[in-house]
Image (cartoon, rainbow, N blue to C red; front, side, top):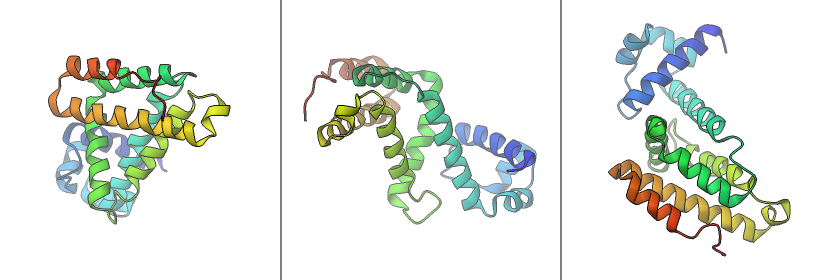
Length: 181
């Protein structure tokens, strides 16, 4: 990736965090980031190519922020929730939610595979909190899947309502990691 392409991708990413991707139009985006639609098409191949690059950039950001969440599944669960609940991550999480939903409803578009890839990403983050003897078992996978389902559901509720106190209390009171599949 060229320096100019990286620069424009970062600017487009900041724009997407503020404005979302649902109604992304190249003209307003280009004007906002000091480029032109022609340059964006040249550098990213198409609008879909740009959206794919933005989604990859969002996944990279998300994983970097979650890296090293801990080495105990309960600790990882709590740290991931704290990260999800932090106000400063809301733009990224709204973008993630939008892309996740579009990936489910438009599986052949630029969103293709995004939801599946992020499930794998998050299961990987949670797996780091399990000892190998548990991680590599069907029960270990089931526990991670349950943790992910709780976190993702709580995140959607939080983004919909903004009620950090209520949703946080539910997450803290859910009994994880003691749950057994």
